[in-house]
Length: 518
Image 1 (cartoon, rainbow, N blue to C red):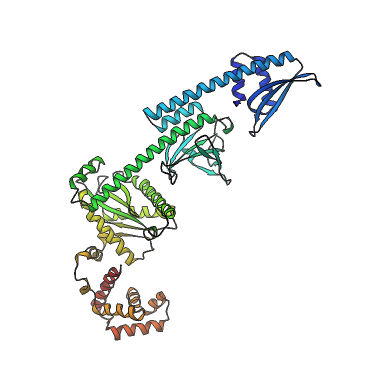
Image 2: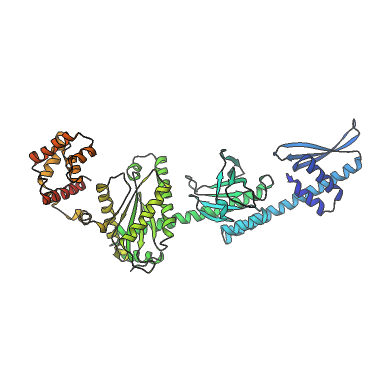
């Protein structure tokens, strides 16, 4: 059994073996001995010296044998005998410590599972700081959160195997730790879900006080097993809670009539005030919804993980301002059930929009390559009526795609636009075609039949306030081509650009026609 030289010297001193202690201290200093595996004795007749051989490990963790020579053979045998007693005593103490540690961690795990308690007990045995992260590297528990501020080495992490665990060893460099080591080894244990898949959390141990070479691997494995088991349990409970919340919001929107009483009961269990005023906010990661349905399983899982990361960022950010809100996800959208007047003051749509803008800025800082579109529904009285606000959000997002572009970031509030309110009721309108000018419908059909671009030309010309030069630049066509198209619009489709009322009717018709195409 491998025992550290420091521990052997301490036991030897404790047992009163002064001569042996002196020899061991000299051996440690001169031979740079890190740990002893065993001891043997012998005799070299040529040198007429007795030999005490240590099977040992040096600082670089290499296994070798080193010898200490004695002229007095009797003294050598006496020291060898005493050293064997010290090694047996060290082995007995180690087994007692392992049994006690195992019982203690099992007791914590079974009776009162708590990550902080586990860390405190570990630090009694090995005085090294610990950080526990969830799958997004949010700190769940830590001895010192300042340790989170570090840079990883450029070297690839080294995978190390234990009996039924593995971890990654990597050198890390701290940015601002005064009075402590500025670099150390980080041991990172991943939490693997029961059914496989993406890692769900991490246990990180830093050898700031007890060097990696002197850490008891058995104690480390017992501690890691206990922590990872508890983390897995907590994360699985968290998944169940998220599913419960997601189902609650989904049923509020789509199954209000058939589950009204049950929904009110579930609202109470979630501490959601049934009679308060609410509005729905939806954050859409543009592109994921279209892409997710066309991906292979592994790629779809990565998209799902990305959406979970976005949800995590929004939840952490939003809860700093509105602790009573619910942030959840179903389909590919993230939904915020926002309770109005949480801070005992009037809340306007402008205030909600300002907060959504902060969310958008935060998301762009963390996910610069992605496009985010945020819709805000109107305020409704009673959580049971949140479905109305949700459907208004859907209309706001659809309208936002038309007014802006489906691949642009935007924030669209339902209460801001009269036309949007009309679009929100499109399904109730049976004669929508009657609201679209007949010449505009003819123009659209002409483009489809002859593959021309008169419809896009008309849209751009109106958007540019009937400025032909600016519209030509926007469409990347020659100015004379633009004038030709305008003449065709006037003569062939009877469009009068001098009639202000007619232009307004055309612009409304274009919005409705675009919505129909969507």
